[in-house]
Length: 92
Image (cartoon, rainbow, N blue to C red; front, top):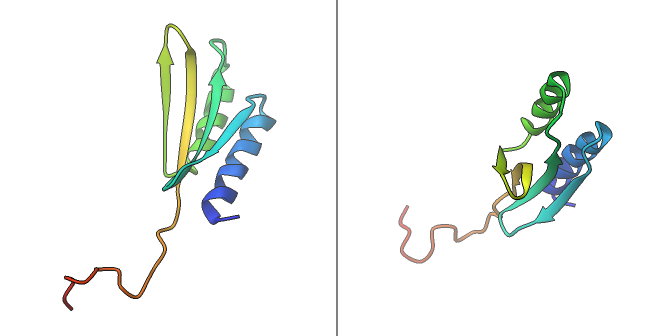
């Protein structure tokens, strides 16, 4: 499992442990973790949840009147290194 996947899995496990079942999804450049946040989440639990998602490269909260509140975190995947990173026009 790539480092991004391991980090996302750890974030998901910690969120699930505090009662917020998490979904992990792989994308081309990053791995995301999403949880539905109840309207009545206590302040101390918010602090703990924010500490967990702060381990990601990016995180945010999507709130709509139709779908409730979804907290997301994204962990960037490492860019593979190659011998020709700059392409044919790259000059050293």
